[in-house]
Length: 152
Image (cartoon, rainbow, N blue to C red; front, side):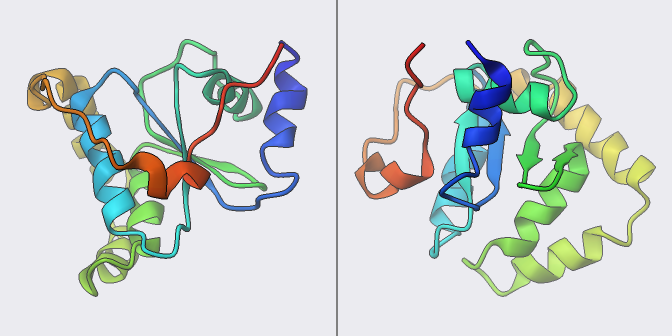
């Protein structure tokens, strides 16, 4: 794959930020479902860290393709990691009036504090996100928020 070309193509026709998430983590998948349910205007697009798009955007963000340690919010201009990504995502959700407030309040918390909490949750995410035999099946309405795998 031409990782650089794939990463650059992501924003050619669609400028919406991309949330990269751990596709094998049930807690992370729950976070994606939460974001979908609370983003009525479709501000964000999504890709798993393990996907081709995810790996290309990791490289574009200065990370290794196997670095699945953090949620990543990728904009056309830059990338945000850990709690910084979560706070920026929360500030754009519109499902409840508190989300933008939480996002704004989170920006005044020192990053070493918010990242300490983030790291604790991330380190234990597979324990917090019990496995489930259920899968969200209504993705049809969200097709434009997920990426198809590019051709080689």
